[in-house]
Length: 518
Image (cartoon, rainbow, N blue to C red; front, side, top):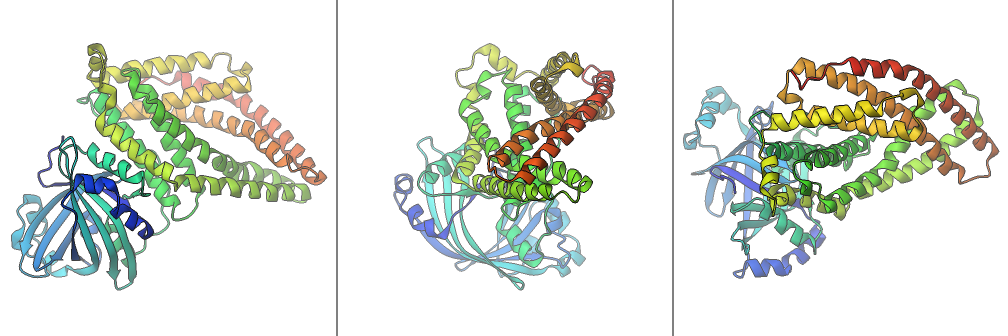
């Protein structure tokens, strides 16, 4: 349960207009809302300044016409998790279609709009006009949810954008109920969790955002006052956010870094599941792990070919510009790479992907790993995070050092295992770094990143031969086959050079002081 005073909690889902009739006929709606839906026309005007003073502070101010009533709403702050929007919200009736600054009751809102200059600069920036059909649902567990189907458009001077979405707003009960209802609806109708609000889409019409950079891993918000379980939730949501942000960008246009960061997000999440399963084995949920493995498998080939085409092949071609076989090889690799990219994009826009997001949301809110857990296991989950973090980091650090013994004599498979071990330590160190002195943690992570990067390059070189075998399967082109041999030789030389420098990288890491003992 959550405190919902002045807090709006809703799950926003996009729906294809062609699927709306099926949604309306869904038997779940009749079962949970025998009285049937009600529809009304809504028109909302959003206000801001020319330089988007409110938007830049994550605040939305609107006046909505609902029948004969005018309602003023201020929204601000909050968070978005796999389509679940949590924002502070204040509403008040007003007499007209303009903001009434006397209606504010929250001290922070009153202070913000007390500036007379700001008030004078506010003007309409866009309008949303849509028909809202509402079902008031009550689940068997007693959760009360308002389901709204919105159909219409966002209008601005610069253009228009369609609105076709479902909003599940929690009125009373547990937030997990929103995900559970969405999953039940998705059995019949494809629904896609959406992080962008109507306001964000309206602002995008006025000032289309530039191509967005990929979202890299950010430090999760953990603190010493947390329990191990609370930290797990924070870390898992952090990973889900990184995944969804990059997936949303990928839908706007392909960028190799989007795919890479989606894979990083999934691997961080899988690492967190493994990490915290030491406290509660059920956290390593087999069904979720299987779906995450599926997603990585769909994204992996695109990433491999992106690295080959952008990093591995260019220096060889630069060294041998007149080698026609390398040009033909690049063309063949580009065709295979295009197919891998198309497969990755299709997977990230599939119903299976969106269902995975909803399942993750439901699972993280319900915390089924506590069901039937023994007292000692619950004690592990409820232990102070600092104790859990220190023990976990020490254990992974020792394991990594063992795997790095006799580094120069490791096989390709053993180097791969060492790379995975280094990655697990790095993820754990980044998850928990906020608990420790910043300088010490940063030095350790930097040394570990250097080791991981070197091992990653060696792994990319090992992957290259597997990729070349896929191209060779076409056969029949002697120039291209000779080019394959050139790259294999180039790779072997680079691998030997890298291995010669690995001892120094490993030594630098071993000398780095562990930060969790301070």
